[in-house]
Image (cartoon, rainbow, N blue to C red; front, side, top):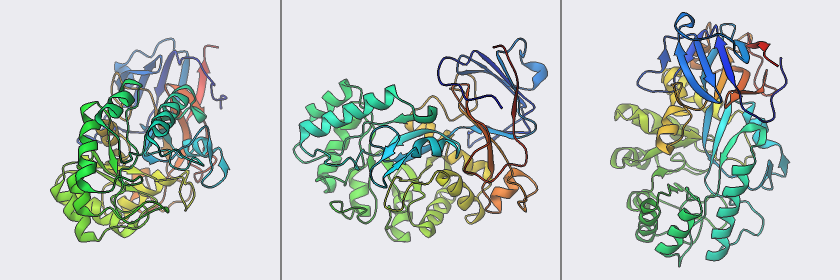
Length: 399
């Protein structure tokens, strides 16, 4: 296996002999294709090998019959700076999560920074700094979309205009700061939306000292773009209230690893019954009191497929194309023009499932054999997943 490239562009990459290609598109989760061509980090062609220009690649990858899927997207993380979390005193958690197939992370607020400023000048400065820092630094190659301020009382429309002008595109969880009332939150969420800043609201009981209960009525009134951890982070609302949120709101339904698993299943089933599975997105909500979960997204996929009875190929879309479309990202789908972020997987060795999808449907997480970000190999066989039955190999390079 070639060593992961540290920088530079991918050049022309040809990936052949894909056994199963998951698209990330919930309307068409499986593609009739076995080949992907990448040029300088972007998908240039997807199809059958005979129909693609596979000549003179800079890198040739033989997938050896494994599954190719879009890189997984964690819709809810709490980074601080670099690949370090003071919440658990751990280093390397982002790189470790990349070994779980995650290629993009989205901040729901840099809340665990020791001494996090809560004055308006300070919170704006922190958000801009975090956005800049992670724009310049990708731990393990992972794209961390950070700089998500926690809104506080006293903020004005001009503050949101200033944040947007500086490049901030996210709000941290509404409700983690002093703004907890539905009417006040609604005003600030609307200001954020006006300036192109996407919002997420905390849902459920308090997660850390200083946060509080955000009930269904506040969530509905605030009308944030994402119903953050609808299954609680950690403590969930009642199943009835969660299902009511799914029905009465049109916003993203975010289900997280660090929440109530029973309610996670109820929320996913409600989305299926309401015929809006495209609204479901997945996150871990880590680092948190329960730690960091390098395999958290894969575990959620296996949980929802095996217990909620949702086909595995659809659940993979919750963590890829659904999130990409909801978050307006250029990754998450295997289609021409998108970023070439891929995870190669196969069924874990000795699983009872005869195929990768069947094994996930039985509750087993797959083995990751390779992760590629912007067409560049970032890891080979994962150090965290169970060993995959088969793994792809780099069979030729031009260098």
